[in-house]
Image (cartoon, rainbow, N blue to C red; front, side, top):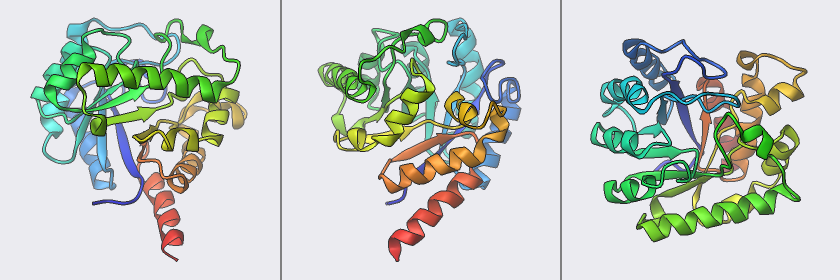
Length: 265
């Protein structure tokens, strides 16, 4: 069993994702990209057909499935596959095609059928903190104290997961950096990762190339934020986070390897 923080590589099969939208729209290109990430040492792949960036517009369900399904089928069997979806119908088809994890950024709030479908499928489930879709989420970043409020709202979703019959051992929590959060709120969540790692579930952190890093780096474009992302990966590894979700793999693996080597000393 791997004891270190895992690296979950992003394969966006979308035209409008904030960092790499349009690069892997063709299924063959997306599969080739996934294989390249595997060659770089990624531990899991997260395949998504819907951009969830602020201001994004949702694609129709059949279009999301058309984007995702052939990529899942092409990469299943190499390493564990996660599918980034808020739709129960996509989740069901993805698991049938070989996915083992459903990464639902809405924590089951976007589709009332999601938790039941995940429970029936027996898949692992990433339950993320969420307050609304990309078109409205920036206006929902209102908190009196972001850390305890995110914890409390995640606990509500964990109760919903349990009520739906999802095995608690299969639930992974994600505080949802950038989702209805300002940059300052993202930094506060990262400064208090222990609030999440002590909740009794694996923790996934998705900081890769996000806006709060761009703000820190004076507006640098997403592709120039990988070193800052690696710094976040170091913090996550030090705090016992289960996995980091990232666009770039080799630098994140290297950063985590340094943490693990120091720990062994």
